[in-house]
Length: 245
Image (cartoon, rainbow, N blue to C red; front, side, top):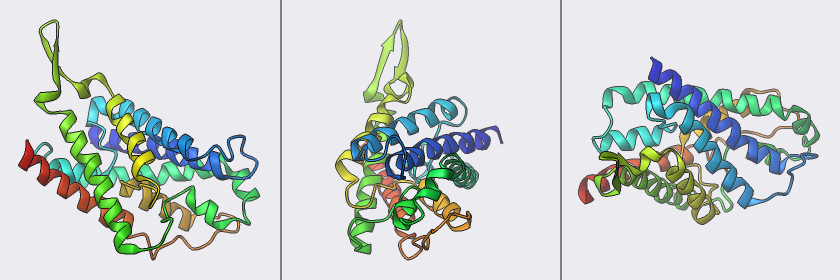
């Protein structure tokens, strides 16, 4: 239960800061409005870093159902723990999104005439709606995410300090932070790089139930893409890891 609790807290922090940078850059009268894609990509990278720093020592900081699934496929995480991790991550993502709404409530009210902008601070929508190509984008991006996470922990990325072996990943969250930033800047332009059902579906559910002024529908016709794509990409990454390493 302690591991599940820290997955919940870590994912909450990730979504609070990640959706928070989207709100800061998008909502009316925010001091960061218009800061742009680079700030959003950096913000999401740092959001992942903070979540990893919180949860890493206890749960390993998956913070993403796709990561838990991919690691289980690769044989580096027990299948029995996957359902509990996913439940904790999804709950954390929901609460994180609610906190973003509470934090920026006045700015959401001021942006009531831009329902698409409001939705975009909670979850992803594609730049060009083409469902199967959108799925492919999420599969490729998430496959890179999970494959590189697995690669970070391999013996080939190990080093020794004072005779004590340590992996690159043991330095902390910096490698994964750089990975998230790279994915956002390189592969985020088509779908907004969801990569994570807890980052997309849970906040989408929060958008659906919160009393947001002037909100539109929650984009349910697209909602399956940021779930199916990342989960499929994670399975592919786990299989590639077994093949390559």
